Length: 119
Ligand code: HEC
Image (cartoon, rainbow, N blue to C red; front, side, top):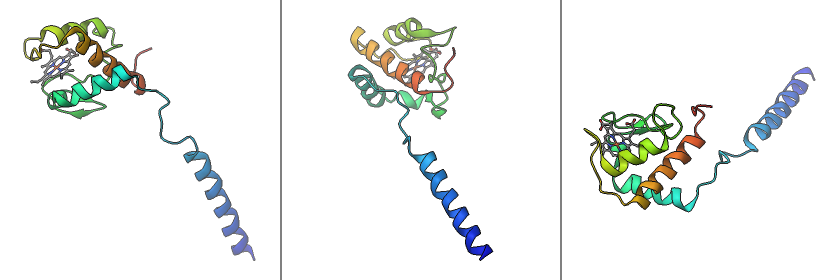
C-alpha cells in the first residue's frame, strides 16, 4: 500500500509541476513589429550572421550584436551609422536609411528578447 501511495503522490507532483512549467509556453512576450520583421529578412539575405553573433551564435569576425542597441558605448545611432557607412572591416552594404532603420529595429527586438540587456 505504501508503494502505491508513493507512486500516486510522485505522479501527481510530476503532473502539477509539468503543468506549471509548461503552461506559459515558450513565447518571450516580446512582439515583433513589421519593421523588425523586414530587418530580420535583411539580416538573413545579407548574411550578417557570417560575421556577427546574436545570442552567441554566428561568425566571430565582427562583434556580438545581441545588445548593441542598448550598450552604453554603442547604441542605436552608432549601429545605424555603421550600417549606413560601413567600418574599417564592416562592409558598406549601401542600405537606404529605411533599411538601416529596419535592421536597427530587428536588433532592438533581439535586445529586448534577451536577458542580457543593460538596465
Ligand atoms: C565581413 C564581415 C561582416 C559582415 C558580413 C557584416 N559585418 Fe557588421 N561589422 C563587422 C565588423 C568587423 C565590425 C566592427 C567594426 C569594424 O571593424 O568595422 C562590424 C560592426 C557592426 C556594427 C556596429 C557594432 C559594433 O560593435 O561595432 C553593426 C550594428 C553591424 N556591424 C551590423 C551588421 C549587419 C546588420 C550586417 C548585415 C547587413 C553586418 N553587420 C554584416 C563585420 C561584418
